[in-house]
Amino acid sequence: MSDIPVNHEALIDGKAFSADVRQRVAAHVAQLKARGITPGLAVVLVGEDPASEVYVRNKGIQTREAGMNSYEHKLPADTSQDALMALVEQLNADDAVHGILVQLPLPDHLDSEAVLNAIDPAKDVDGFHILNVGLLATGQKAMVACTPLGCLMMLRDRLGDLSGLNAVIVGRSNIVGKPMAQLLLRDSCTVTIAHSRTRDLGEVCRRADILVAAVGRPKMIPGDWIKPGATVIDVGINRIEEGGKTRLVGDVDFDTAQGVAGAITPVPGGVGPMTIACLLANTLTACCRAAGLPEPDGLTA
Ligand SMILES: Nc1nc2c(c(=O)[nH]1)N[C@@H](CN(C=O)c1ccc(C(=O)N[C@@H](CCC(=O)O)C(=O)O)cc1)CN2
Image (cartoon, rainbow, N blue to C red; front, side, top):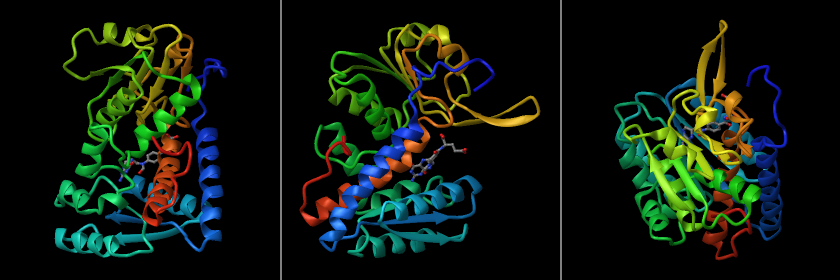
C-alpha cells in the first residue's frame, strides 16, 4: 500500500479473519482433546527455499498454537523421488497423523504430481490429490485447497448468500483458479474463468460482482477494470522493487482499486494469512472424519 489513505470500511482484514478461524479451530481441538483425540499435521519440506522455510515454520507454530501436534520433516534438496515417496507412505500409515502437506515448490528433479497423488486422499489437507479435485468438481465432499477455501470464507462473511452473483476469476491454475471456480459454482454464482488469452479482459472484469485475481502479475488489474461496489479478492503475492526497497503487492493495483471496490483484500494481510488458517481447519476436519465425529461448523466448504 502507498501513502494514499486506506478506505477501512472497504478493507477485508485477512489477518483478523484468520485469527478468528484459528481461534475457532483451537476451541474445537480442545473439545477433541477432552475425548483423548489430538489432531496431528505432518509437513514435509524438501530443500532450503527461504520463503518455503518461513511458511513451514509458521505452519508449525500455528499448528501448535491451535493445540494440535505438529510433525516437521525437513529433507535435503537432493532427496530422491523414492525416499520422498517412502516418507509419504510412512505418514499415510501413521494413525497420529491426520493431515499431510508437502510444501511446494519441490526441487525440479522431483515429480510433484506423483508425490501429491501418493498422499492418502483422506489426509490430503492441501486438497491437491486428484481424487479430491474430482470430488470437488462433482459437488461431493472433498478436502478443499486452502487458499480458495479461505477466499470463499471471506466472501461468504462479507456478502452472505452468493447465489446469482457474477464471479470472474482471473487465473486458471490448478491450486487457485480452478478450485475457486468450482467453489463459487457450488454457491450458485455465474462463473467466468479469464486468463492470459482472454479477449477484452478489462470488459470481462468490469462485469464482475466478485473479482478474484490469481495471475501472479504485480498490479495487473487497475481500478477502472472494477465494477463500482464489487468485492475484490486479491490472491497475488508479488515482491517488487520500488524506490530502492522491496515490498509485496497483489495482482490488483490497490491504490486505484480501493476507491471503486465495495470490499477488497489487501496484500499483505488479505488472502495469505487465510491459507494457513484453512490448513488448520482442514486438519481438524480430516481428524473428525477419521474419528467418525461431526465436522466443525463453518470451517469447511
Ligand atoms: N503445499 C503447499 N505449498 C504452497 C502453498 C500451499 O497452500 N500448499 N501455498 C504457498 C505458500 N504458502 C503456504 O504454504 C503461504 C503463502 C503466503 C502466506 C502469507 O501469509 N503471506 C503473507 C505475506 C508473507 C510475507 O510477508 O512474505 C500475506 O499475504 O499477508 C501464507 C502461506 C506456496 N506453497
